[in-house]
Structure formats: C-alpha cells, structure tokens
Image (cartoon, rainbow, N blue to C red; front, side, top):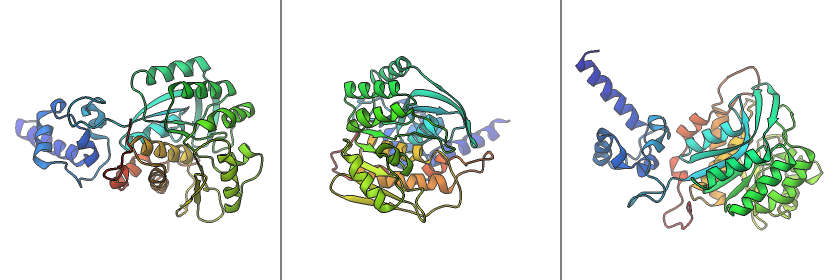
Length: 353
C-alpha cells in the first residue's frame, strides 16, 4: 500500500471510530491519554452528540477513560459486578452480563460461581466452584476496582449462596440486584433446593431489587404463579422477605408479556410486544441491564424501563445461531438504545458512589 492509499485508509478508519462514539463515551475520554488525532477531533466537534454507535470504540471505550476520581472534570466510570456462572455458548450467565454492561457503557467485572458446558440446545454439564474460590474473586475485585452496583445470578449451591450473602453484608453493597436463577432454559437445575432456601433467607433481605420469573417466584413461595393476579400476590409475599423492590418477569404469561414491579406501595407494569422467536439468556440480560442502570445512577423505575427496552431489542434482533434457543443480541440492543435513557435527569443526586 503506497503512502497516499494508506492516508486514505487511515482517514476512513478514523471516521469509523468517530462515528462509534456516543456522548457518554466522550464524557469519559481522558484527552491526555488519547491519540492526538482523536483529542483534536473531540475538541473541534465538542461532545459529538448525535453520532450513532455503541460503546465499543477501539475495542473498549475504557482504553481512554479517566480512572475513578482522577483529574478535574473527569466523570467516574460506572462499575458493575456480576456474580454468576459461565455460559460457554455466550447467551446467558457471565457472558450475557458483561456484554450488557459494555453495551450500556458500564465497566463490568465478574465473580465466577460455576462453569457450565452449554449451547443453544441446553446445558451439557456443570462444575461448581468452591466457596473459597468465589470469595477470593469477590475480594480481589472489591478491594481494588469496587462496584457501584452488583448482581447475582447462578449460585449453584447453598454454601456458595451463603458465602456470597456474607460477603455482600461485609462490603455493604448498596445496589444489589438478585436474579434468583434456578433452572436453565432447557430445565437443567442451577441451584440446589437448600440453595433456594439460603437465597430466600439470606440474600433477599440484602436486595434492592429481586427479579424472579414466574417459575422462580413459584419456587420461592411454594405455589404456582400463572396469572397477573398471581404475580401481584407473589410480589406482595416476596417483598415480605426483605427486598426493597420485587420485579416479577411475565415473559411466560399467555399473550403479550408483562413485567410487574412493586416497592410495597406502588405498582409498575412494564408491557411490550411478544416476538416470534425463542431466546435464552433474557433473564440474565434483563437483570444485568437493570444493574447497569443502577450503576449509572438511575433510580429503580428508570433502570427498569431501561432494562425492559434493552432486553426487548436484544430479543427482537436475536441472531439465528445454533439449532436451539437463540442468544440475545446485546450488541444490536446497545446500538439501538435511546441513549438519553442512560443518564439521570439533570440535578438528580443519584449516581455512582
């Protein structure tokens, strides 16, 4: 490639990178750490607001993000931690959580509780990790990077669930989302019966939000949850176990899905269309998007609206991969999101701490 052709290529490449920037990304960019051409373009074009794209600039916008608390006028990077199992197929679990965090402009860290061999057709095998291994991961992340919000997913065993609860109490995690994962999409058990009891007894009282689906709510309460009225009664009873908010996901209701949220006083119904595809990993994606919203400083209702929109987009654009249930399309959801939904309203005191 001669010099002129290389210059044309470089200009085109730089334009593609600029088109991938969002207003949120630019706010986080440390101009002193940027390549000169990028810093110059940002100073020239201001925030570059309105340019389309997701948060994967140059692989990760974090490459040029200022450290938390570092430098004048630098915004802290929102941080979220997921405590869950690995899905080798990439559609659910830790993989879905980290994709969601990245798509929503949040730095994601993880604590692995189990390794699963699975694909679009189901779970082939599960290897739980020891409570000691879970604990050392958690401390390594929290003692250095920290987290503005934390979510739990697959915990696997009662001892791991109890260990996680003890660590969350010790570190006084303020924004905890508990996704009580009990079975994979294909029915494979992901939490023992004793683990279910530990989750209800020790984790739910710590939760800002708990996000069971109909089956999980039924297991926690020992009764079937099949209708919208069942969901209301289940939400009331689950809130008595300690969480500030209960969100029962109604994706398995007849007709259009309805997610029902309750804080002990007010009800919030989140309705949307049903798409003609079967997707696995939607519960993980929803709770991860909720956690990302909380990490970014949104209050619970706003974070729920964000999570509902993000998850719907991820389902709508689910790729036809494998021979079973499709995985969500987190990248497409991130590109198509209404970016204004990602920030608290001006003057809102909420925000990452």
